[in-house]
Image (cartoon, rainbow, N blue to C red):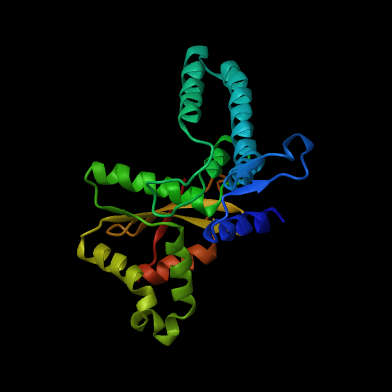
Length: 243
């Protein structure tokens, strides 16, 4: 209903209407208010029910973590880390979009980093973006690919017997990365892979040595759905090192 009211306000403004009357509020029943108060307070309500809730939860999480860290590490170091987190929170607006990454996301979703909630694909892509920039500044030749890379690579693997991988423009960007590794323009590849829908593993490939570093926080061995795809794509059996 609120969305319909906001939409009606936009239509009313376009038709020349300049004010509204709040008949449901006795104290303001005799007053006319500018039309913009309706979309304004609708946005305030949205911020309070979504963005504010997320940021308040993040602040509470940092406060609780501060108590834990003080018991497990040097108190001054814990204070410095937590203060840096608080400073970041104080500089962030409650709403808007995240800027500076390949994909635009709602700003309040950054609060997930300061929580025990599962990270989503957008968070992993942001981490990979930051890593890519760091490596570029250091002048390395390592390619950092976003989460879509392995998903597309797996799609290519499922149809590799049909010749679609070589012929379809859909996989051209993956072929481009492969060509860069073969020619030496890139000497390695790093990315992350989702396993089973609820677990992330990091992958780093040294193409020249046919080595794959497999970072699994559970310490589990590489799963076949990953090794079979990478062995096919690199055109060689790789040695997997669990980290």
